Length: 110
Image (cartoon, rainbow, N blue to C red; front, side, top):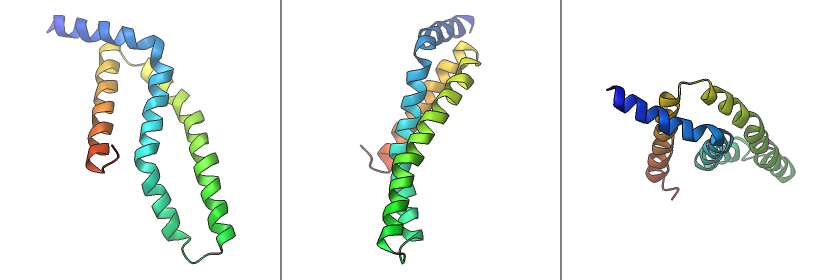
């Protein structure tokens, strides 16, 4: 068991310099998968409104909202991942990407 934990910790240490990029990728992939659901909800919410209001909301959410999420959530996620023990950080990152991949496969985002 100690050997497995040691291997996971070593693998986690190799991720440490790349945590910023890993966090950005996790947030970006999540936005790709959930962005269509968010846009669909927004479209239903604003379905009877003026075209100017619908277009403005679309621009605000897609450019500023998603951009703000990328800029604010990525550093926060990086900080949270960096405080985890290396072996658990490695397992968390790999599991997160597997879950994102499975979710994308399920919702046909491939």
